[in-house]
Image 1 (cartoon, rainbow, N blue to C red):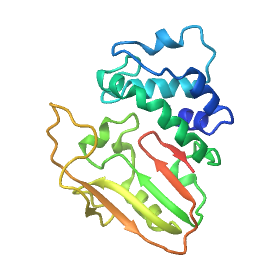
Image 2: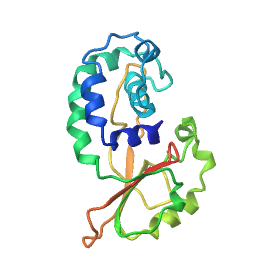
Image 3: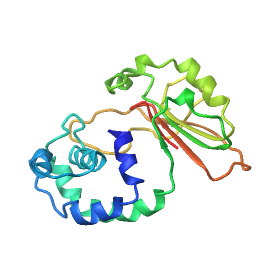
Image 4: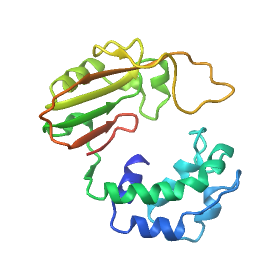
Length: 203
């Protein structure tokens, strides 16, 4: 899904499709199948609708959540402002260790190396974090790696005292975020992002 969405967002006609087809409003409980029925939209655009519908409830990829319905009116304009800024991006579907080592800003966001990381489609238990840490250290340029406090596969430093982002009444996690950052001021302003949660990469 992630790769499909980025393919769409960087395609030549993404802005036109969003302008014409992305609903301005959405009612909670509406299914994406109802909206898509009979339409010949790009797969990435449909995936984008499903992703936005599932905000705050990622296990529900078809029904618009109440949180998503409230945020829907802002989504279209946000997309239209972002798309022109990413049209020059090159998107690949390589695994992280298949990427060429170029001097760049590397942003690595792997599933947490704990029980939370095993909730992804490709769980953390499938990742060799020792190998990933060595790969990260070997990258040229600037490196930014995100994790949970307590991770040891790189020398992470605490960033927050608790979870940040979407909150809910049932959210009880107090574990903070952590980051490992290595600066290199000579790096070119190229950004390479490795989303290991989906095992897909945007470069």
